[in-house]
Amino acid sequence: MCQTESPCPSSCVCARDSGTVTCGDGEDGEVPGDIPEWTSTLILKGSNISTLQRGAFMSNGTESDMTTLSLSYNGIQAIEPYAFLGLPKLHLLDLSHNQLEFISARAFHGLQELRSLYLNDSLLPAAAAQLPGALSAESLRNLHRLELAGNNLQSIPLVNFNFYNLHALVLINNSIESIGGENVTSFYQQRRIRVYLSLNPFRCGCELEAFYYWLKNSSQCPDAGQLLCAEPEAKRGVPVERLRGEDVDCMNENLEAVSYVFLGIVLALIGVVFLMVLYLNRGGIKRWLNNIREACRDQMEVYHYRYEQDSDPRLANVAV
Image (cartoon, rainbow, N blue to C red):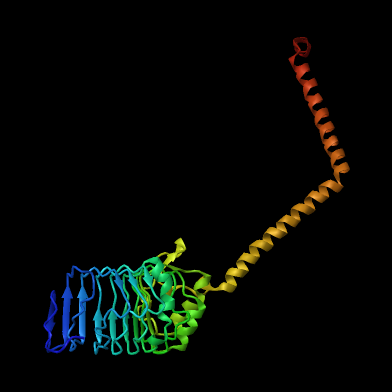
């Protein structure tokens, strides 16, 4: 970094007493290279930085004492490996409201003291798929708060993440339909973690069973009362907490499916037996049908004879 007497960078406002440097509306699309060495908080906004390159915040190969770095609303599209190298004391990193398409698996390498990472409304589909690899970095083992709101995530990107120190996981306003049993098991193991999940379109069926009982039996989801079913249609708008146990009971659902299959088999067997009976008794059935036909024919002849007698005028005169 530059010397203590270095002037405040152009397009920046410096507050030496608080250690804050605020920069905005940069035209070169790069991180300012002359940030004062006394800076503890750097706020960079509206600079149109498309790529955070390796060591983007290092100057002359020296490390910084910066503890807070806000990079929201900068149009960042890619974070290359070791982009935050030289910031070993960084506690808070805000990358919200960007347009990330690429995140290297080593993007956050070197952030040993990072406590809070904000990635709200920043992840495009490609970056969302790469995020689990980036979050599994060993350097994030001290992370306490992770915010991933508004990213259209369909699952929790922490399957292989060691979040023993994570206290808050914010996943509101995503596209999560169900929480898998593996994630639920991790939540049970990490009693300190608080998971925020409102504004997600939950599919309230059998696959939600483990998550449903976790909600009922723990207090780790502070916004549990705001979790609503989106599917099926019959349960839309119903709070997940108010579902009945049988609504998410996989055993009952499987038994119901088996019962329908069994009913179909029974009906099919009855139909087969009926056809076999008809086939084996085809001779008797044929005779029975012939007898009915003959009886009907005799009856019709009687009616025909009576009709002819009643319609003959000579018989009518004789009757008179």
